[in-house]
Image 1 (cartoon, rainbow, N blue to C red):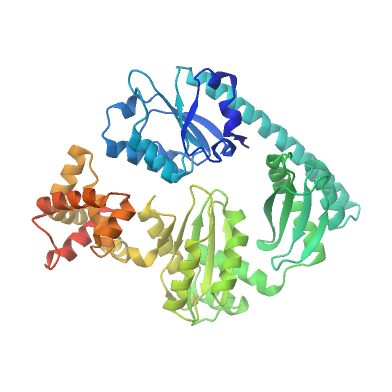
Image 2: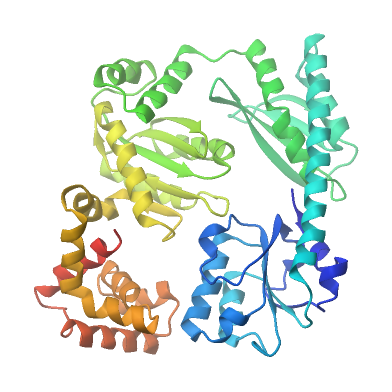
Length: 486
């Protein structure tokens, strides 16, 4: 559940801090706050899930260089937190300008707390409100689900089930097939507002999408919970109306077999039954997200546009898919480009596996996609396994000592400089080499001024024995940066 940032700022305890929004003011007050957290740890970003209002006393930031402060803000923005609230005072008289500049460009609201307030009291007040609201929503969602189950038991159709849901949530309800056909609908009390969508699978196959149109003065959190609670009932109703075909069931079993690394003979049986050629090129896709199941409809729709055939399967916090790539590498490139535009919740990551020659290599493509995702960490929302071919090869055939020794010989001075000065020379060199030594492009990706980029490169060249361009050292340095990721 969540409340709006404006509601959180108006809480009694937080009002005592005289909060002031310093940047990213447009729409800031309507950002959803999922939880309130307090921490002085600068490396807190990987531990956050998104939607948090983060409170900080500012002491840890006070003695840090500008680059470290900027890195802190970028990390929080990348995790999708709702806002950062910093207490100003003797330790941090004002919020540094470089932090505000980066936050503004990243769309992260920064709030100045101009008076000291007990953070424990702030968290207790707002988080208690969030917990109480969550419990209430769950109770009402369960009530709706039980009422829908009773309606189904008495022979009610989809329209009758959706009417129960609409009455409980105060939202219009519509059930739509993957192809866009309306299967059932019930009008809400008012028109307009935001639309909350929930996937409705039947035996693991996406059968429909539930759309709940919440009025502007409605409760979208209740609509989301009640909609998710009603999925099983709607699935039963759909199963009575249109059970999945053998091809769809074979697709589910194929994805389960690929996920578990089943033997070749099983893949060769299930592949043709689910529409895949035994010898046709394929590539696996894996999405890691707390909302993996809800991303399936968007992924399937994209697959239908880009590739000739596909299958998907949601398992816990992962959504996996297999794409048939009739055009080989060109179709795979189109798939990667399309996936880059797929909307993902904060904290999600997606990877595309290498091209596999036939259904036999589908488990290998999936495994390599997962390995690449592990190697990439927080470097980006989409990871192309082909860009990690060197790392995957080294991870498989070079032991840790050999990799570390090579990195030390090639980049030891750079690594030591980063450790002592808390600089980012290794990351700068990595991005510069990955862009083909394109200084302007690397500066854009690192959000650096061109002059700052040149200064960093000059320092790197001093530590590495000169400019490597036009020499045989370039490949060794590039390999070392890739091994350093491991």
